[in-house]
Image 1 (cartoon, rainbow, N blue to C red):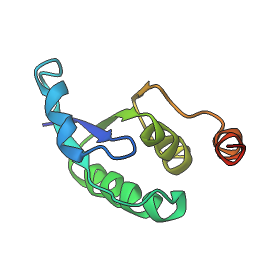
Image 2 (image 1 turned 135 degrees about the vertical axis):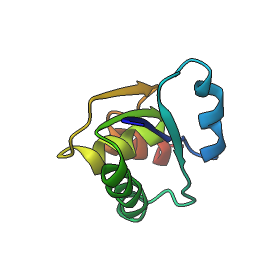
Image 3 (image 1 turned 45 degrees about the horizontal axis):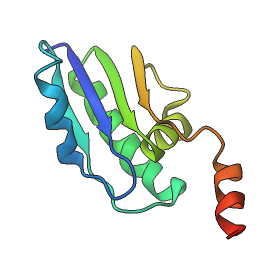
Length: 104
């Protein structure tokens, strides 16, 4: 198979959520990236490892990322060769999100 979609879940999500996209993504292999941390510099190693492994096998890499997973994808893969990325409810301004959380 030439094409793969890497799925990056949101907070408290699961790599198994990739299964909900499988029926609409025929012709693609699907890989859910399993991570447990919320710290970008920890999660980036796991995402980058999955990306690097996918590069060994696939010619075309796509991303589906949800919520903070979209932020992690943008943070980690910004210099990588991605065909297309589909972000669902992306966190675009992490600093603002953190500051807003501290106001309560």
